[in-house]
Length: 287
Image (cartoon, rainbow, N blue to C red; front, side):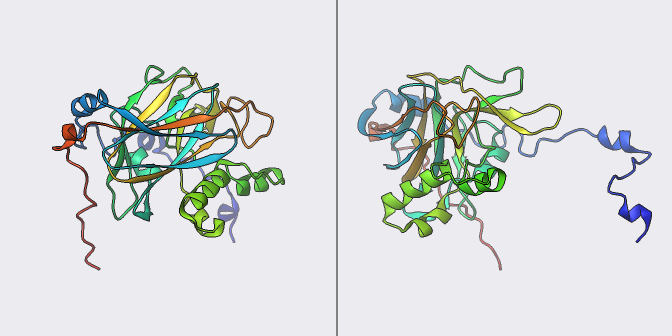
């Protein structure tokens, strides 16, 4: 083997500057998607009647159901707290929230007007974000925003890998237990259905020098909420992250943690009789 092949540090080519100077192209530009009619949903929001609520204890998870055409909110009720959200088609657990495609279609962080998309081969909007009390935050000087679809979820396997310790209240575990409890599936059968999350209220970004994923204290305060419109029948699970506001740590029994509340609302369904509820992707694989 030659010295060149053994050298792990590649040499800079003569045209390196020219290659780097090429212009970026947004993969899915704004305007590619047909936007939801938020005016219609705003009219429906004026008629909301609460039909259910679920309290998610600190460092724990709970499941909830939302019928198609209903609204649900994730609410901060006691102190700054981040939540990890999973969504499934209530009639087919194999169809679930696809954070990667949602990120590609919208952005690294989502807010009102954005949609949560489902996995292939269905690829349909599962929920539309209709209100965000933290929409004012935007992007801060560190390049951070709120409600990200970047991070996965804290889990006991990565914790074991990095710290050599066992921790049983990671968001992955909380979500797995919540799904098992809601469906009657054994934990081992429920766990593979848990997937990458929407990090509700979490404030995150990438460092400007090393481009590493970072978190900082969430700006959420009691009374803040993120609201969704269910485009299909949904089964959801929410974990109140053991990192609290994630300003210092996660997977921890020492961080200050608080409960979260999920509220489910029924609107006047007559106002949605013309709503274009989604269909699963019409693409037919020729194989």
